[in-house]
Length: 189
Image (tube, rainbow, N blue to C red):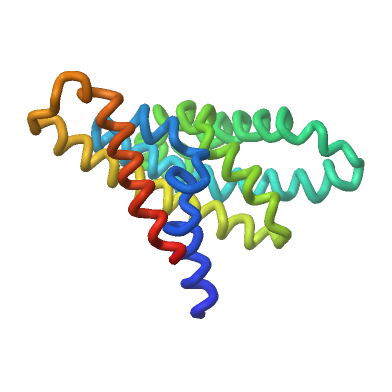
């Protein structure tokens, strides 16, 4: 049990996809303006990331490695992520109407999100099983959600503070992201 908790904490905090791995910085900058948008993207990533890591792991192990066509990894993974987003956009409203309606506008954003592709590629570095890939995707999505919601909350507080003119907008967001990244650097020890 302690190994599982250590893995969850390590992936969520010490190896966070946004502030440590730097694979999810673009959504942190683009979607940190409003809490509703950030929550929708976080929920979408909680659905998409475990599925994407699972399917790309299976594709890598069942097709790419045995046929020795690893050079097709990137275009096939991008295509698979787009197909997965499209399939979820069609199937989710039939499975759960509330979830389908909430994620409908966020699935295309998640498909072009660098966090997904970065997580998939980082997952393949680890040798493991399909279940470990799903766990990695879920824990990475939790870390993504933690940082994105934190930055969004800070960004909303900064809207009502007196910030010098040159720092308004993107510059203060980058400074905030840098400070959050520095705070996360303390987790590994």
